[in-house]
Length: 354
Ligand SMILES: NC(=O)c1ccc[n+]([C@@H]2O[C@H](COP(=O)([O-])OP(=O)(O)OC[C@H]3O[C@@H](n4cnc5c(N)ncnc54)[C@H](OP(=O)(O)O)[C@@H]3O)[C@@H](O)[C@H]2O)c1
Image 1 (cartoon, rainbow, N blue to C red):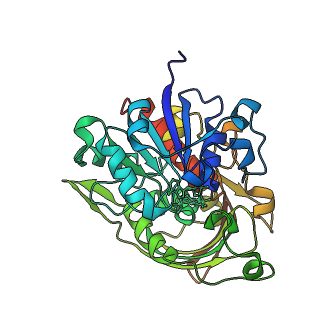
Image 2 (image 1 turned 90 degrees about the vertical axis):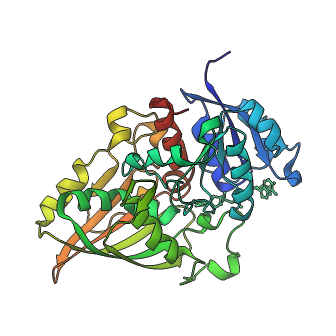
Image 3 (image 1 turned 180 degrees about the vertical axis):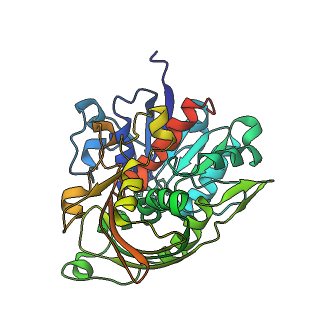
């Protein structure tokens, strides 16, 4: 017996599920009980389903078998379910798991706007974790914690740092989102190679609401959304991994560029203070070069090794006409996906909420 918490990975043959498996190898708190997907994948060897191509899994992981998702079995065998399944399936499945006493940490969007379900990025809003106590299932140990969609996650940590230091009035964001954000096999190659698609279904609405929810508060049983405006334009670009985002920000105060860079680089949150295993030592890396950040160089930013791809890289910080401008790159399936849920579960473990 390892004494580690047993976890299920839902959607283990998909882009997010395989990042969960990567992050769970030799994890100090958690141990994989089972890898789950649809009946199409039942009985397959994990190594024969690989979508992640930049990480070498251990042989014993490659030899694990995929099981068909079975909520009854998972609820008996596991304390945690890490979820990387499509939204339409995640809605009822995650509710059922929580009802059966499982702590669900999910990437899917279906529960993000539920009244007592938090969207947590632990550098930003661990104070909202208390909302799980108002979920109907909390009494029997089950609850749902979501992380934000991948484009919101990349910028919410820098926005938290800037809001705390200088106050935000308005945020205009334009995204250049990687193909892996659409799951596997994602956007058809004939649509995306040599092209930019200025439409990602529901992405702009998600960014505008999720950022306001995360940067707001939870009190008296309800979320109060942050008061500043967010306006988003989202596009898909022919990049494999790593969302690039352009920010134009109106702030209440008028700091110098150097002050803005220092606030970002010095920012540390709860995961850093608690020393969580997947927490990047420096969550925001400020690049001084004139042509960074770029996904090709910066997508795996983050140290130590367990936190690779968990830092946001910010660069080209400028000010014109009273607006602050900058670019951000972050990993959409690590920081913006599985890594977000992993950090949330590590926080819950460390705080004794499991
Ligand atoms: N990709 C990103 O950057 C990103 C970021 C944040 C959040 N998300 C969210 O995370 C979730 C997973 O996304 P993804 O990109 O990993 O998608 P994906 O690559 O398409 O993977 C989907 C997974 O769900 C499984 N699945 C599908 N139907 C199922 C069923 N009926 N029963 C059990 N398992 C089933 C698939 O198994 P089979 O192989 O057996 O079909 C596969 O393992 C989605 O809700 C997505 O919106 C994605």
